[in-house]
Length: 103
Ligand SMILES: [Zn+2]
Image 1 (tube, rainbow, N blue to C red):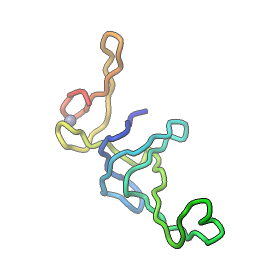
Image 2: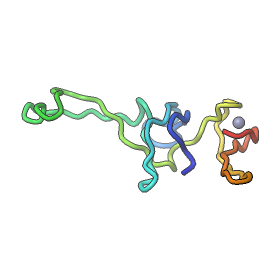
Image 3: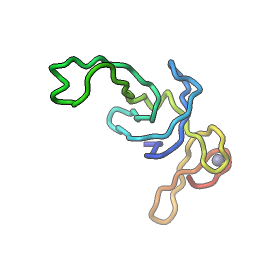
Image 4: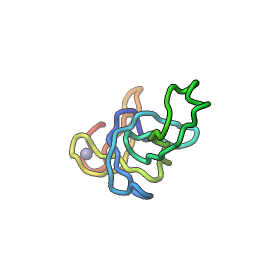
């Protein structure tokens, strides 16, 4: 998985294209990530279900986004970049392909 929690990412496709957010959660098996305040949808919660969720009315929630639709913003050079990997002694380290610094 190229992305980690708390990464800053930019959306490259879909309705939120060009927007940035931080990764809240990752789903490696689905190759999706949940990004804060992005890919949001509204859902109406009926009264019967509010007993379970504690919420009624319209709620906004974020849906996971396929990793193919996001790109990493490098925290070092602040540019949209691709992730490379470098193997040091025992560790696999993520590298920014723009500035070559470990992320
Ligand atoms: Zn960089």
